[in-house]
Length: 397
Image 1 (cartoon, rainbow, N blue to C red):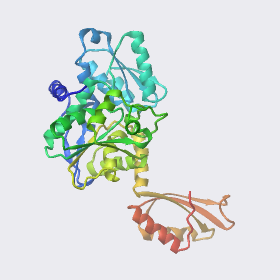
Image 2: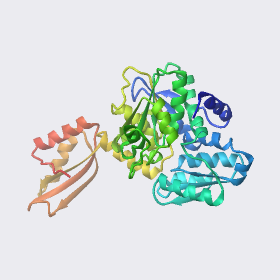
Image 3: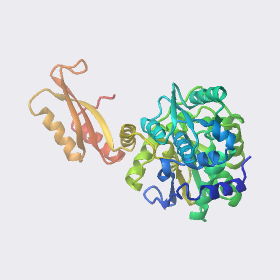
Image 4: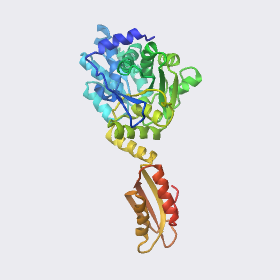
């Protein structure tokens, strides 16, 4: 098992190796909300803590054989950074679909990267095969006491930075992060709630809790690639059962909105996994009305192209962008009249398509499709009302 003493020992070992990340009030997210910014950690994610604690504990014989790990990206970078710093060879099996930025960063930290078709669990199977074939030392990303103890140092920092914290909200993939934080927090402040958050499309720990045992999902699909794990570990499941008060899930759209809110409100970049606690708070999955709540933003390693798509999804979900389709008369001034109605509502046109003589339009009519910038859902409703009041029929997509 993992103890408070192990976590304190890890904290001493990590002093001068990892950053003590900031904990800031996030008033634009909520009056009782604070952000623990592990996205500002070296390597861009919390995983460095557990990875270094594991690698520094290897025997000389284990270190000589080299270390192997499997990861969607953040654990990979943590292991690569730690192994290189300590002069140890590292081989990392990563899902072939992992963000390019994470793959390249892992290589940049000195690891040999093996890309494996599928998701994290497929990379784990290949890592196990290579370990048996070559005798490497395996560094599990979450189901390892030393890794968990390293992640638990975040819990100690939270209690030091905000002693009156009443609730900590943490992402869950395989469960290593929340297990370590929960052991630390519950050992020192038992009345502080610890709540886990999973993507609805990869809710393996949530499902396991319902079944009372570690349960493997048939598949996982989420923009939060860092927590796309089919099955939690037996150790992390046991620790979650003992120390975690509740687990909730969030949708892809909610995650996208949280990433957008962090960008605009906190001026900080979070990857999908790191934004899940904020998503849970924003959409009422966690009650923060009477509790000082820390959201652990676990990482910020996200491809720019992926971020662009996520932001677009977030804008749509939050009512900041809307696509409408309607018909107008095919005569001079028809399009101008429609645009005048849109302009009067204060919506801004991003792009517009004016299609003549399509299968969907009547003779003498055109179909106009527009993407518009709006303020919020209320503004969108005002736009709809104005269009209908002027006789424009909205075509449902």
